[in-house]
Image 1 (cartoon, rainbow, N blue to C red):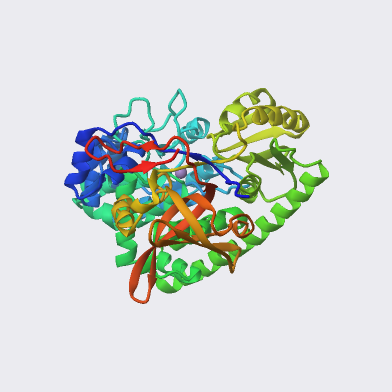
Image 2 (cartoon, rainbow, N blue to C red; image 1 turned 90 degrees about the vertical axis):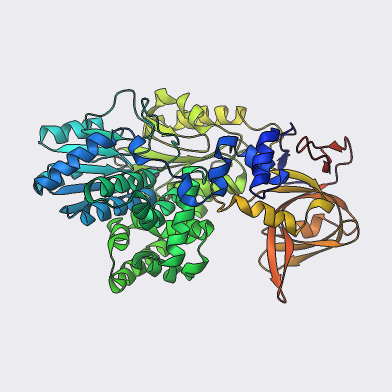
Length: 588
Ligand SMILES: [Mn+2]
């Protein structure tokens, strides 16, 4: 009996704008590609930039709010031979952004030191300890990276100590801007910057390029191409959508790392066993970002900053080995914590299909990872709390369809502070309020549970099996580089007959699927369960990513099968992909 694991969400069937399809076609793209682009909100005005060289996707850094005042203040520091302290967040976005800023200032000949606050002792934002460090070192100017918009109190304290602060950040700004010399942040209410999806490292990249142009005549394009590898890592690590300017940064970053990986990244890639020439955004996500983050989670984030700042291969190798070791510890500690959390949950009587809420003595640096794992495995929201000082700190993760930020907002009377998004959030709470929170949050999250209880899977295209071929794979490759917010398209392939299904090593399943006269090969990663539920002769639809398989010198299409459903025969009707094409049919 075939039971789909996901609730499939079909693409919009409304006809596309003819002008948009024509513009995509003018660049060699198809109507099917136009359909996917449109679903990702790539508009007509963006089509030329989308297909053009990567630099076309980058906007003028002079349009970022606050840059003029900030650049003037730094120029003054330069003239007066003042030193500057750069403070960056301890995650991969903050660390790569810090490396960009420090490298730019050093290239200008400015005496620059840096500091990374501790996740455990300081938390996010500009810490008072950082202000004290600046004071002790006689620094009169601090530049923040990937933080600071909400650090009004600390910035005021710096001011009292005669230290000025320039904020560069991409987090939401509070209703009152902090008392900084300048706040460079595309989310400022008065910002006219065209694309607010930049991360902390992205903002640092733009500002660094502007500084080097204004103060040293280095073309913006040169700085951007040189430091885009670092901004690309921050972008992927912060799960910012790889669309618009971020996609331009990702393209330039990949070019940079393929062409000439800087020593720190080369060493980290070697430790991960990935060849620099083979780096994709996926390898950035699973090989580079976790190793850079590991230091801040289970050790000292300075190690990661030092790695990104060295140009000496031998020094880089030492830092890379330390990060790799930290990553192994992080993995072990996370695994153990996931097991413990499951045991705690069992003892509490389980999640009862509502939401998982557990507390335990786990390192604060990994509770987000543990919550993510529990949420993914159970298909339910998960909240994992751990004591920090007098209070509990918690990380929350939820599958699509839930809204954690709204649920926490409704519990704000019980919380010390909270923040986040629909799928990921965090809070702090007095331990005495924990039982009340558990009860209320279970009720709130249980009530917003998606109707059929299945997680959603969004299809980018739904096509009859005969329309799915290697040409489609090549056609959709124009979307790349794929990554967060711009994933490999998922295609609903309709009307297939299973001719063979067998288990493959590692818990996977291999499928042979017949369409009219030939067959398509499928591999379903992590779906060993299909071997017991799918039978030869079954008529099915599959949801799959298109993959290229090299075999005997030939490239052929393979379906990366995500889900299998019984064929839908009802309500067959054409999908209007565009007014000028009426070829595709698909069941719904
Ligand atoms: Mn960030």
